[in-house]
Image 1 (cartoon, rainbow, N blue to C red):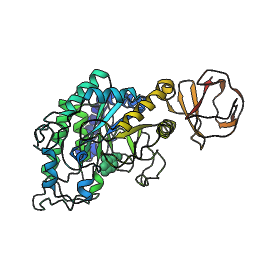
Image 2 (tube, rainbow, N blue to C red):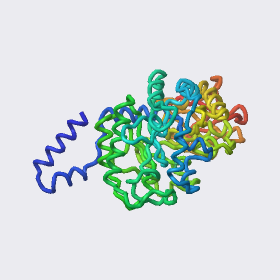
Image 3 (cartoon, rainbow, N blue to C red):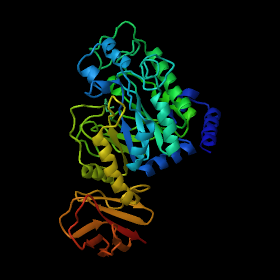
Length: 437
Ligand code: GLC
């Protein structure tokens, strides 16, 4: 149907004459296909995903920016690949542990800024199949396992590259010894599009492509629209998001926020970004690092992570929670522990999160609300009183404590509802379910 709409629009343009055809087409709004709109809805319903930052940098144990931060000569850095043998990697174990956390999708780095491909690309030998003694395509193993276990797979893809000769100099990766006389944007662009084509044709249905890195050169025309069109033509339901830290560009299907909830800017990445009408996703680390950091044991508590997920849902956003796997192929023990703690909570309370949208009561310092049909869930995260005023218009017919279904008294007038809680709320999330008329 959407295709038909686009076609008749193009026909109308042709008939109308006027400005050049290509120009007119560029000015038209992006019309997502029906499959794409459906995928956006499912994405929003899923609410919770796990981010995986994994590459040969895990061997050094200081995160994925190490090569740049310490100006490691790229040829020396590349020798890490020759020793990369994650003997304990087991896609089934990863996917099972992640699924048990209640997460509904996995977003994994297919190629990060260091330029090393974690899949069997034919376009460069610098990849996990051809460039390591391990020789296995972990993305393929994961994609098959994800399909078996019914969980979606998304690919992170870096627009910038500290390894290749043809990637033009940007703001980062300047001290890693790449030659400066072989830069060739056209060749690099072709390489990226070729890799994206491989990812979208060889790994089953891809839930999303998660781009990152165009902030490396803000003056460049990255030719995103053409790239996005290619992705959508290969897999119309594949969502596109880009971590460019500004409001979404044409052709993108969701908006992302790095280390902050939509509307907040404590990490300093989101000052230039208003909240759009697209599905929203916020990404956050479990400790303080994306890629494996052997020193970083500063994991957030399970309570803090659950509350972050609940707040994201209350702000109508998904949470993409990161883990940096160890060089031996295992997820760190603390990360596994957090997954199972979150899973235990989701098992009991997931119904107040999955399939919801930000609720009628705007986020407050005490907590947030989520809504699904006529059910409005009040998530009280931090409150030290038994009377709680909820500014809202919808008519409430019943209020109950979600944990045990016991009724909760309330009064309502045109300003809103006052809950008379039987106790001062405690625990990670004291949930009250309101049934709406
Ligand atoms: C930043 C970093 C990158 C990380 C990403 C995750 O853009 O460059 O290392 O992958 O954030 O949000």
